[in-house]
Length: 331
Image (cartoon, rainbow, N blue to C red; front, top):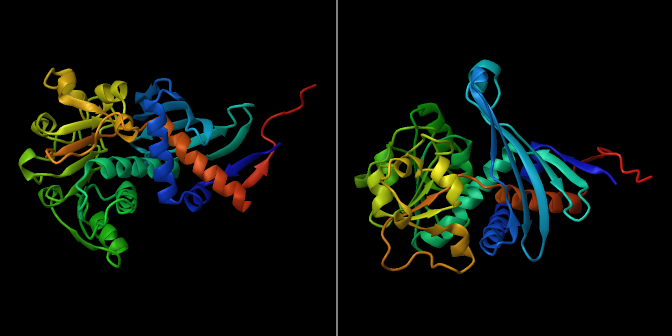
C-alpha cells in the first residue's frame, strides 16, 4: 500500500465547496450524536518566534463514512514580513481508522481555509434569514474569498460589502468578484448592516459596534481563535442568539472568551452548539430571532470531513503522488 501526497493545488481541485459543506455538516451532526472522538487541541507556544504550533486529532463516524486525521498547524505572525511565508501553515495526515494506514498526507493550509468557510456556511444555512441576499466581510484576506464562496452556496447572495484597513486588499477582493456579485469596498459599519456578516480579523479589541448590525443580521465570528481576542461588542453577544462550535474551545479562545472570563457572559447566554442544530436537537433560526451569532473556533472534525472529500475525489481521479511512506512488512 502507498500513501497519497496531495499538495495545495490538489486539495483545492478536489474540494468542491458544496461537498465540503455537506461533509462538515455531517461531522457536526455526528459530534452531536457522540459519534466522534476529538481530544482537546494542544499548543506549543514559541514566544521567541512570535508563534505557536497546534495539534488537532479527531475521528468522525458520519454513518455513511468514517475517517481519522491529525492536523499539525501553526500561527507565526512574523512569517509574511520576515520570511515571505503565510502566517498559517498546516499539514494533515489522513488515516484509515480500521487499519491505521496513512492514506494521505496533504496540505492543511488550504484545507483549513476551506473547512472554515464551510463551517460558516453550515451556520448561515441554519441561522440566517432565508431571503438573505447581502454579505458583509470585515477582513479582505484569503479567508474572505472562501467565506463568500461558501456562504453564496447556501444563500442567494447578490450584494457584498468588504471592509479592510488595507485598501489594496480591499480592491483586490472587489476585482476578484465584480463579475459575479454587486461588490464594493466599504466601512465596517457598512458591512455590519448586511443580512450576513463574517468577521475575519486578528484584533483583540471589539471593532464591530452593536448599533451597526441589522435587526436580523446573522454574524459568523471567525477571527477570535486565541485567548484575549474579540471582534464584537459584548452588547451584541448579550442581545443575540449565540451558537458556538464547541463549548471548551469557545470559552477558552473563541469570540466569547473575553466577556466569558470577565463573567459578563454565562451559560444562560449561550443557545447551544451548532452540531445540536444540525442534528435536529435544537431549532435553528425562528421567526422570533433577531441577531444571531456563530462563534467559530475551528474543530478537528471539520478537518477530517474536508480531508475525506479531498481524498475520495483525488483517489477517484487518480490524482496525487503515491509513495511508500511507512514500512508495511508485517513479518
